[in-house]
Amino acid sequence: MGYWDNLSFWKKTKLILTIILSVFVAVFAFINWKTAPVSFVFVDVEVSITLLILICLLVGYLIASLFESKHYNTKVREINTLNKEIDQLKTENKQLENRVELLTPKADVAPSETNTDEEIN
Image 1 (cartoon, rainbow, N blue to C red):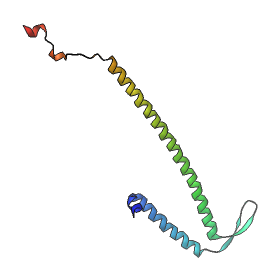
Image 2: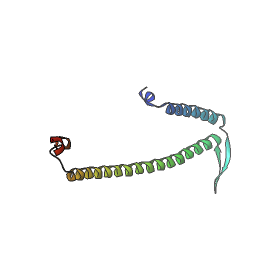
Image 3: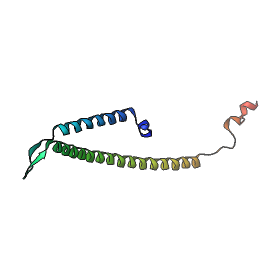
Image 4: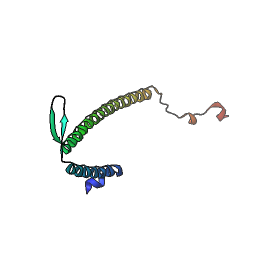
């Protein structure tokens, strides 16, 4: 049950809907186990309607997965580029802070502790 507990509400909903849809597809497949002629570019074949539907679903899933992985890889590259930029900016920031620290004069006595001529009289 650890897997289920770690899922968000939307992922649980998506998983349940996927299971329900899969059951409907399986029932539909068994009901429609008739063959039909299918014309490919140069070949005519007799294929079970169920098998044809499953092949179409598989091809659709593969195409969607390809597009999803391309989108995912693009985002990963973008994130890596931005992380490198952040690291460079942090390095630059540290260097600038060090330069400012070196250029800032350090006073031994705070200005409020110095006595002026007016305070003595």
